[in-house]
Amino acid sequence: MPYSPAQDAAPGPATWRDYYEIGKPKVVALIVFTAIVGMFLAVPGLPPLDAFAWGSLGIGLAATSAAAINHVVDRRFDEKMARTMSRPIPTGHLNARQALTYAAVVGVLSMLLLWLLVNPLTAVLTFLSLIGYAVLYTVWLKHVTPQNIVIGGAAGAAPPVLGWTAITGHVDPYALLLFLIIFAWTPPHFWALAIARRDDYARAGIPMLPVAYGIAFTRLHILLYTILLIIATLLPYLTGMSGLVYLAVASALGVVFIRYAIQLRRPNAPGHLPMTVFRYSITYLMVLFAALLVDHYVNLRF
Image (cartoon, rainbow, N blue to C red; front, side, top):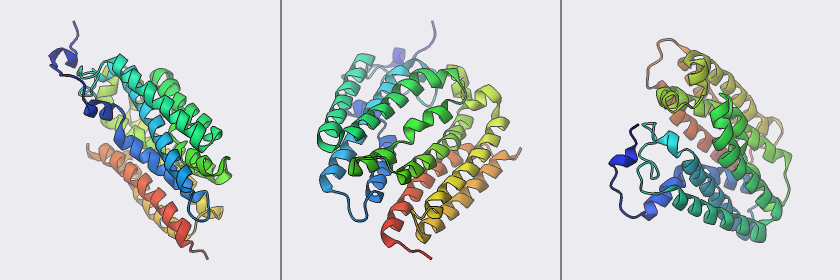
């Protein structure tokens, strides 16, 4: 009989910490932050307080629901991976029914808030993003194609668009630029982690790019997508959406990212470098969107 961490666990009743963990709070925080930046960029001044507050809460709850569903669907794979075997479901602190009930309650609440207190378009787009991540990516794409991150990245790139529509009630071309940035950022971000955890993914039978095509192939594609990302990050300035503050920060961040991607291609690259790139990519996105926000109000132009 194969080993399962749950067999050694002696869990007590589920606690709020277990539910908190299956909601992936760090991931949700980044999602909500990019959505909030979208809200502020959507208007010249400050966004309306009610749309800002209810929109942020609704988007955050939807992301939490999607994360909980991800924990349920991936529970058999999480048991086999060192990175995830200590999660609440593999250890037996929560069962699938408890997690799904939590996801359903939080998901329904998010839709009600967005539909009734924000606007229907934001509710519909948020629902599609939830389904895209929790079902299309987690259930299907993740297990059938090495391009899972590229295709499924659309759901993860949606938050700035959701934030924008929460304030304006429509999808703006500038919001789509923010979508494009996160869409291009997602592959090098996740592929760096996939290199570092290649053995884990191989053991679980998940066809991430380094498992299916090898580490050298993945390193090349990290470099190519990083170049695409840097090009995408220049578009807000080139289209007049953002000014010099953003351009300076985006350029500096891009230089560091491309340097990491080039170092990763070297045969003698240190073993810790993929995780360094992964962690940097998170900082990169946070600082980049913070720069968009600051630039929106500083507004320096040639």
